[in-house]
Image (cartoon, rainbow, N blue to C red; front, side, top):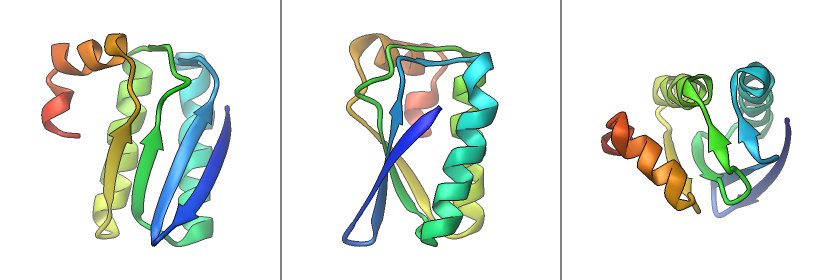
Length: 99
């Protein structure tokens, strides 16, 4: 999955380019995100999720893995621009309390 990365005021904003984050995409997504974070050496990250229409448990797991990675470096992960179905998914699995 392709990513658009922007740095503004010490925050790395990552926008996934694609409508799905599922088992087929999650491993590549995670690798690309970690590589982008390491390349920028910025551990304050925002995911702009406006293009994501569907996510499964693999996608959710990827978010948790990235969050753990950032926490070990003293960073944070925030989620932005989630559509209603993604918000509902996060609420159903109580991940809205984590992010």
